[in-house]
Length: 447
Ligand code: NDP
Ligand code: 2IT
Image (cartoon, rainbow, N blue to C red; front, side, top):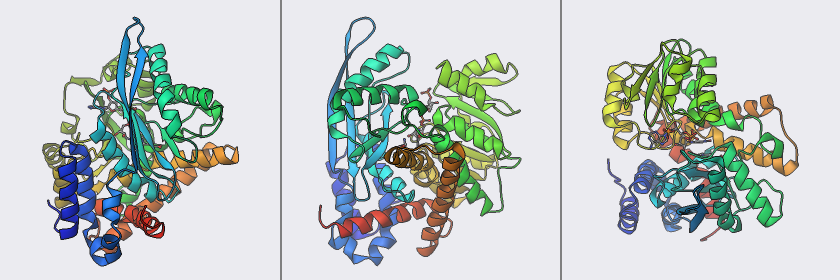
């Protein structure tokens, strides 16, 4: 794969030269620019107004020291990031990731993809992302609190309900959002919806916890239906066992599937009778333990330490852990085992080679920007509720989420069709997401 359009190829070459070491960011940009070739060719004003050059350069990058004191009294220092990528259609919006692998490349790829994802939701949110190389694993609640307070002590001056609204991502859930919110309020003396994914007692939205996983299944369901298939009776493999994976399990099961395998970074569990998501909740949200603990609840299940979850034969695969976790070889194994749909819950979980293989071999493919947009969409619904100082019922939020995911599917399918790539939802998502951002950037002049 390579970018053929001369203008786009030149812009990409310049970006690659300036950011040679940022491989995840370059991977994300290349994938989008490839999809945009027909759009750029049809609309000369994109090149004339430097839309692509502006789109790939973040509006602002903030990097900062995060010093904190561990339980043994030792000073620790992490690096914090917030990349405010694009505010053409609304305040910057996107999660915070706490994981030792976090670096500028990862935050930039996530922030870049967030622009298109957020546009697809049809809600007024721009793109951003942040995080730190802090590893919450094995840390006490007090250590996590001190880290979060230190992180917010710098971040607070760059965010706000109408400026930039962070949320959760890997390693950031209800506990972390609570500590971050408390510190923001304390420093700024403003009680506002500056974060989403908040607890229900202080401005959170019902169904935000479930939203990414539920939304993923709503999107997958549309894709399956359009191709004469369904979750009913299907065997599903879900990688990861965090927020997205857990609630994808719940919804897939409710829709009639059996979730037979899930994992964490140590290994996978296999349970042909179906993995009960409430056990995963107990293990991950309450005990903060490893997935092998599942055997304490279901002794008949299997645990494969260090195993590759994509070797488990399934009908539908939902990668919900992390970037580049599903490689070409995994795609081949899935195809050989009869898998007919891969839909992404994580961000950029499939490598470009894996995606190309799936598409060439007629396996339905749902791209992350579209299929996992339910989380951020519901975050935007949380922002609406905060603005009107009301909270909506679970059913109301879930129904809106469902409508948004159906709409995203339709828009991606229509955009792919319009540009002569029927069924290519990955290209459709990039084109449909780009459309609104491009309109707004054109209207707002060179800025
Ligand atoms: P969590 O921290 O709740 O869970 C992450 C899960 O993925 C854990 O099971 C973790 O295992 C596994 N994992 C993370 N990194 C790795 C790695 N390097 N190798 C193997 N396994 C790994 O995060 P979320 O569920 O929130 O996020 C999962 C994915 O979904 C991410 O790509 C995120 O960007 C994306 N996403 C999240 C949204 C949200 O609303 N939370 C919205 C849209 C996308 P372990 O515990 O062993 O590290
Ligand atoms: O990748 C994502 O869309 C998220 N982590 C959720 C972002 C948000 O603002 O809810």
